[in-house]
Image 1 (cartoon, rainbow, N blue to C red):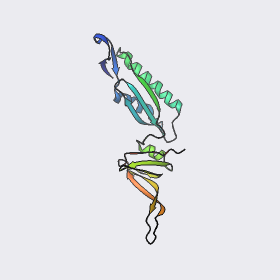
Image 2: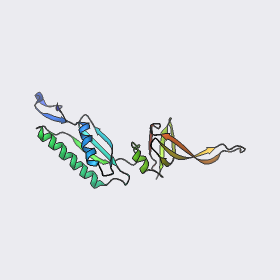
Image 3: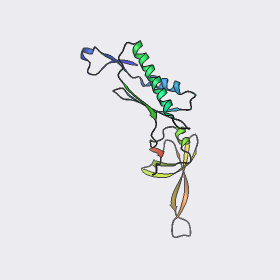
Image 4: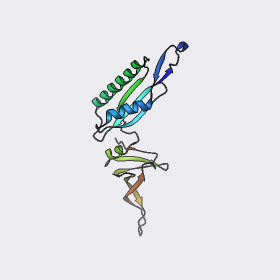
Length: 176
């Protein structure tokens, strides 16, 4: 944690902890070890609003998020008390939204067999996520394809493969 003057404090009389994102990440990763959970998002705003999002193949348990929240509050309070500083932050721990873009390979694996939306080269492509490997993922897409000897295009399933860094985003295609 970094020591800084709190905004609005008169004459610099009140100190507070500026959240150290790397320290928070270390605490979270230590807590997540061996649980099957992965840290997906860690955001710390300038005003110390902390957002932690986790995920796992089997889904996220709300009690696990509450336990992680309590663990982080305890770590933050211990750090503040040991440095005799005032704590000034908000903390939110939860799962990623169903329609948030995938950020880790595990999220692709979790959504195998599900419909996804891929934004690549400015075009939205929708289809079923059918494979995931170390470097790429594949989606079966329904397309109209020209068939030799026929006047009309026929609807076929075409498998499209991309490297993880090619699309602008890939996310679960929520349908109602």
